Length: 436
Image (cartoon, rainbow, N blue to C red; front, side, top):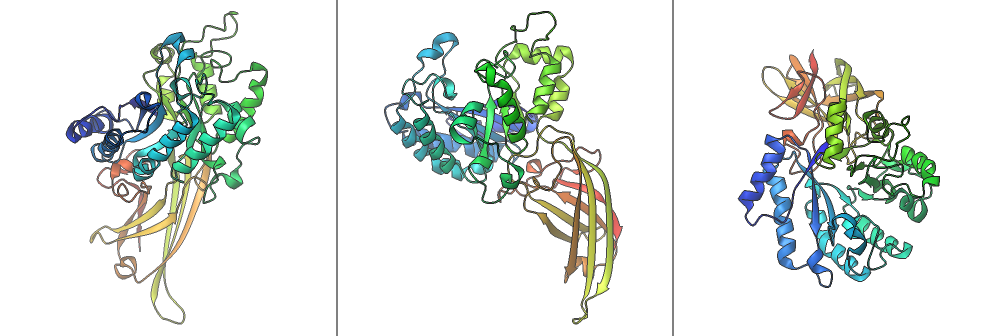
């Protein structure tokens, strides 16, 4: 969806930090917040322990104050220039960058439950991998930084690169394919996404697709790759380069909707560029964008069957439970982090409940963006409440956050887009009922 901005090291006390996290997640309904981690003062030194502790405290505040519903898009940078000053922006030496990544690795790991994704950062102006003052944009240094970062970030989280030609020319000549996208452990390529921080600003998106002669090549690569990895970013200006009177500006709604769908966008900055966001409101596509960013699962139909039988050889009574769900993904993307699925079977009178694991990761088995897909599950239950308690049962689909500390948080669970299925108290989605 759309994201807000936070400064993870701004607050000196936990209560204030938790208050802003709660305000974003609970009061305003944000699920993502972007945070720069500014390292300007440490270009020539290690990151001090006090700064690392403030970062830990900020992420802990997201965990505690966000009530499981807020995650961070995180990027480190040594500068934040304004206007044309970006050409003079200062970053750090390659050895210093690698030292800082090593220092931050334990934080990436300890707070991975509230980190949605890590943008590569560190290099050049705004950490956007251009205009480096220390030759960090050489191919050799790009490789060293990427390798260090993909190793430092936990294996169930992605890293996003800024430029498609870095993906294509430096790291991975062929886009990731379905066969390797979700295999565990995921390869570095399967964990590498793309962020565009000048979306639609010009025919090259302000250099994102430069040289323009290769734009079609990049489009084809990204169209394929982004089915499986995370894409997000922000706009940076109204497009004023399409002035022939026939070609609409790229920032107009028709082009925006087309490219957001084409590249399977999951998130966008709601506050930048304000003129672009306002234009989308004025032209009538803002609500569509808000609704379709990321995934949006809608239960089209569900068939539930249950049969009691006696197991041959043991004489034990058992229940065979079959569930077939047809789900449509009305969003532009799929979840970019792993997400398990459970079937919860609850006796209507006694509240006796059984939880059945359906899959460790819904990404390869639930529908892709814009698709409809059937999901089937067959479970044999022995020596359980369902076997012992005859009667009417309600069935729920539970899509919790896999992190142990967030698994029981309703706001951390995926909510189906259907009306009247969401259970606010536990984060379950009602499928139906059956007598067993």
